[in-house]
Amino acid sequence: MKILHVSDIHYRASDENSALLDKAADQFERLRPDYILITGDLTRDGRADQFARVRRFIDSLDFCHVLTIPGNRDAGKIATSSANEYKDLEYFLATHPDPLSLLAEIDERREQEDSKARRIELFFEHFENAEFFYRDSQIAAVGLQSMPEISTRQMEVATQHFLNGQPGEMRIFCAHHSFMPVPTKKLKPGDTVPRSADILQTLIELNVDLLCCGHIHRSHVWDLSDGNHRLLCCNAGSLLDTSGKKDNGYLEIEIDHDLRITKRSLFTSHTEQLYHRQRFGDMLQARQQGTPVREPQLEPVGAATEERPKAKKAKGKK
Image (cartoon, rainbow, N blue to C red; front, side, top):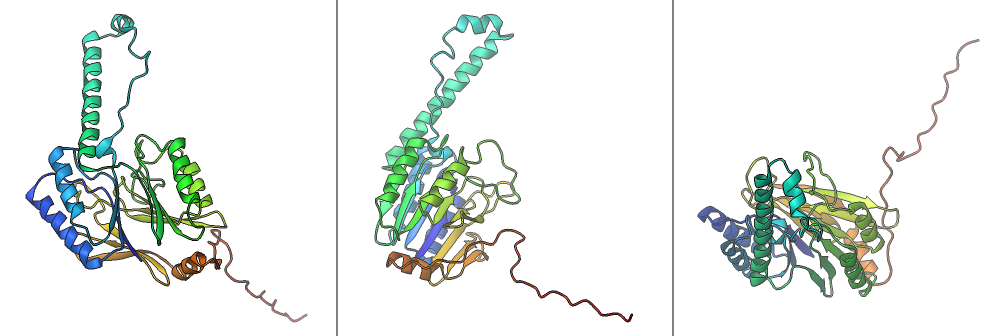
């Protein structure tokens, strides 16, 4: 089985970006994956022409299953004000040091909300669903919106989807925002999913094998375990965005006898192996056949790997 994890395409109209999408399609076809997971921020600004071009790109990937969710740049949820927030406008005007600037702030906020609402409409003009609940003979996969958070209700539906499957199936969970910090990246407010620790624990208890996310434009793999089950938290870099010090590329996840995760660059032929777990494919096959093989668990940091013989004391002359 082969999976490509792509995130943060950030497409904006230009000859260069359009050519890069064609190049990505050619690379993906040569790799011949079984699945491509795209974890949000398909567009740079949520514009109609950007959605249309990315839709054509995804339609060209007809040699495999493509599962897609939006990111905050595609369909950020509208941040609605509370019912009481502006009800006493006279009070705000009387107490605010600069009433004109307050009105400008209100107008600006309403314009931002209108813009977000329009982006949602544009997304659904090109994509049927903003979340997916997928199952076939090889995998069970869930993709949820994470803007502004992953709600309890969303997790209830995801849990039911996994519980309705076979105990030995390979399970994958996708979201746009990251769940863990990664080296070399200073996190900003909103980079990680709220209540991420609780959701990670739920995913481990549901025997989810892969968590795929993006947003922070860094490639990294965390191997998490509760002592009974191991969850791989995979962050993909940005496919196209080259502004600043970004980590460009996508992840190739290969499962045969072992499991290997490789970062591939779209711009060069450079590859870097990020992760290798031995016997995962054998364990998965046995698990699907109902005869699970317990794989070695992670050793605690600093744990001794072998017992060293005690050194003999030198005998001195009396």
